[in-house]
Every structure is written in C-alpha cells, then in structure tokens.
Image (tube, rainbow, N blue to C red; front, side, top):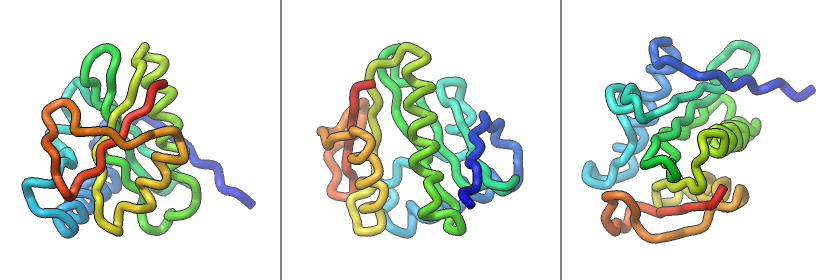
Length: 155
C-alpha cells in the first residue's frame, strides 16, 4: 500500500524540520568546498522572500523544500532534501511538483536552481531533468563553479 505524502507550509519551528535543515547544510559542506555551498541556513530560510514546505508520511517528516522569489516572474528552488528513510518513496518529486504549482499560482513564469555536480547529486539532477529542467548558465549572482550545476524551466 502506498503511503500518502502530505505537503504543508512550514514555519521552521519544528524540531524535526530544524534537524533536517541542519543535516542538509552539513551534507552540503561535506561534499563541497565552503565557497561552493549555496544552501540556505535557518535565518535565510526565514526571509519573507522564501516560502518553505515540509512533506510528511504518516505524521513523520519526510522532506523539505523552498521557493525563493527572485522577482515577480522568477523563482529559485532551494533546500530540497528528503530524509534518508524516505528516499525512493516519491517525496522529492511530490515536493518539486508542489513548488512548481505554487510558483505558477503566484504568476511566476520560470524556475531556476543550483545543485551540486558531484556523484551524490546525480539523483537530484535526474529528478529535475525528468520534471522539465534543463541545464543553463549561472543566474542571479551565481558564478561559474565546477561544483555547481544550474538548471531552469519555464512554468
């Protein structure tokens, strides 16, 4: 039986959410040099330009994701992370589709993202490509970086 993935706006106050954000940041620092880590910390995720969601299965936090407004027409996907216990359960895809729908509802016409280029990030790159994202150059203040892959899609 397939468990239902529930997505809800998250105010970043829950302990499970804070732990997964911390784990996400630690993982980024474990795989990339400091200047190549672009993940947002708790303070940055609390900025009014950022909307943050969590996904849960049977009441347990399964994943997180955020949308940062670049401007009225463009958004950046941030802080996508699935708890290791739920990898392969469709949590990342469900969160991604939710964020795309939220961006579309806000009148955005394109989404952008930066993800890692090393082997650990290949599943993320494949997920984004399967949902219509294509590689592009650096955007909105990013610089070329061998540890980064930049992607975009129209919505």
